[in-house]
Image (cartoon, rainbow, N blue to C red; front, side, top):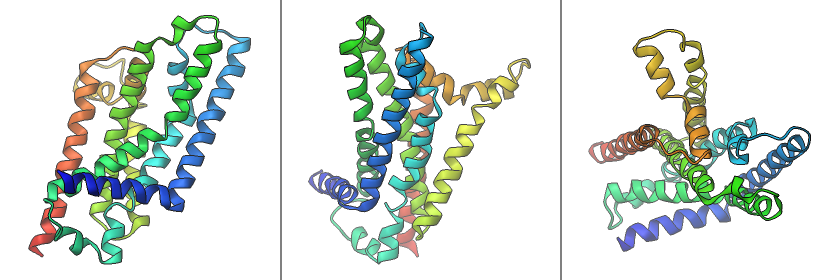
Length: 250
């Protein structure tokens, strides 16, 4: 357990000392602030009964941060170790393959969550000065960040798998971006097949990330998307573990 925590702290420290980490944080802070500014300007002219958190998750800024941050955060997790020749050294450390995979995933996931601290600050500031504090209650904010954590788990686990199957950070980033974009685009198929009954329509609606995040942002926690995100994250981590273990037999 101590070795697992040490690996996790090492990965987190590597993010903050690298220029990539600073760029990701700066971009996330800028886009989060910009999106909130745009929303508040629009709300001055046209009030809406929807929670501000739901409006934020429906903006392209939010999905832009998720789609672009995931490859940048995860591309170096295993690919850099292989390129630098330190992967074999890591595998000889007094930790199991499972602990290595979980440590790298945990570090990336925590870093992803830290990117959204400015969003929490914006919500608290808005709650302080809004005329209706009930519009930003704890349930709504908690549901929104639960959705963020689950969604981040899927993208971080997928990026970890992409980094494990290649020694090139650029290739890992491209694979992660392609996979995340594919999952994002599948959300648009739900509306197209709504008029048709069948397994395809149900599957498309089940994969609709927009509806999932909209529910979370309203404080509605449905067990179906929770199970979907957790199972997909577990699948990616399982595949990553198998890829890492396969190198011992080469």
